[in-house]
Image (tube, rainbow, N blue to C red; front, top):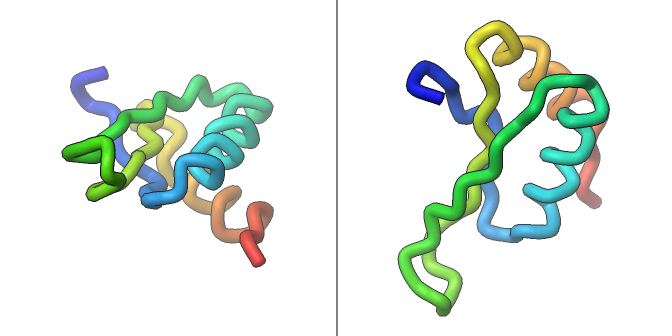
Length: 68
């Protein structure tokens, strides 16, 4: 996972889980990393993908996933 890149970040874990599920359905094997510094919710969760999927993942997140 050395060269993997973050493609999404949010402090709401359920949103990150949705992004992870969508990217997983597209065959990208995304990884969720918890970067919160405490149980009080300071910090974010991030989704990382392999370098070959970065552009495609960002496009899918922008065009197909809406949080309203």
